[in-house]
Image 1 (spheres, rainbow, N blue to C red):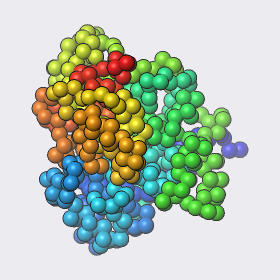
Image 2: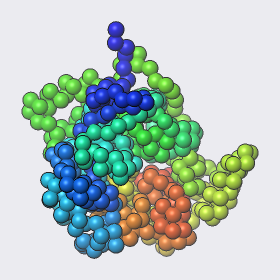
Image 3: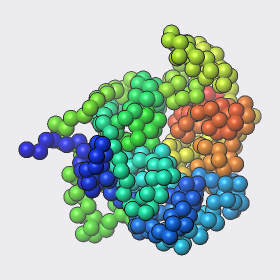
Image 4: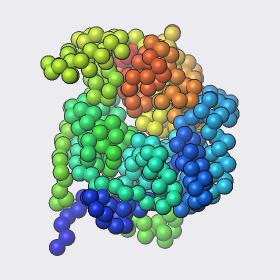
Length: 466
């Protein structure tokens, strides 16, 4: 008798090629995404060994991490770009890998273009040399980030050896308030259960509030699963998923679409599926959040205060160190904090719906004096759609700079940096020490709060602009 299975158990069973010793399995990989930083080295290492890419038709590359995003950029937009672009082009051409190059209409952040091109599909196993590959679990795909050695293994074999993780279901029921979005949901989860709360688990997000989210919001939720300690984040595919994928360039068509749809509808967790851990969150209780420290669990409501020092010694030390780095004081109101920069973009919040939400806040207003504000679309497709809707004009008229697609100030390896000591409100997904540049102070939040903060010249909410 077969027990009811979870979405994760079904995906794992579908891709398990062989059971190995030591609780490990050999897992088949359906889609391998490469980017400009980790791709060239792995391809070159494979070539030096005289080996070919095992499945070039299932391997796609794009420059995103290392390229600068200034208007009119070229191959020399950054030091990283100068070093990696030419090797990436040459190696992709030599080894039969499709490259969405800098001037391609498909170029953009790797976790943005996979879904929008229809490469990311329910039921697939997807890997990339980037920890936020879990974004694509929003489609009911087994998607995770891998290291340099594993990239080489996948290129050579299209398989990986993995230890099966435990499973956790995070059920979010209720209704989100109008000023709350998916970024607030995941920041609230991380703040409540810590940045290690999901460690060792694959997370399935479920519940009425999750089902009510659009696909781009679901991607935001899964994007930060890795910041909750998990390697995988999943959401069961449904009609919202299928509507998003229908007609995408690489999605199945005709009879193949109908066949795929029949398969995808079997993937959601069975009613009596069991999980190793269960968490519950009431969406009605969630408010806009922003980080105040140097870890995503150092987060609080935007209208709240910076927490007092915890009682345990280790927690107190980390608390003091975070406040020292951020130049803040316990007990002060977060919303009173002046800022220097605003960054709206990244694989967490660089999609069209994110820009639309921010533009609604910005329209008819001006960025505060002394604040430098950027909008960086997640892809050329997002850029085109935003321009067709006039969003670029809304932002420019407000005093924002409209940039070319790429990772930009999320990781600051491309010349797009926050200066030492400057404070940036950012829609990216990490606030580690130096993440946006040496000495940079980062406050992670959603696009509406970031847009409002740009107008206010300090951390604040759209409600303060009414």
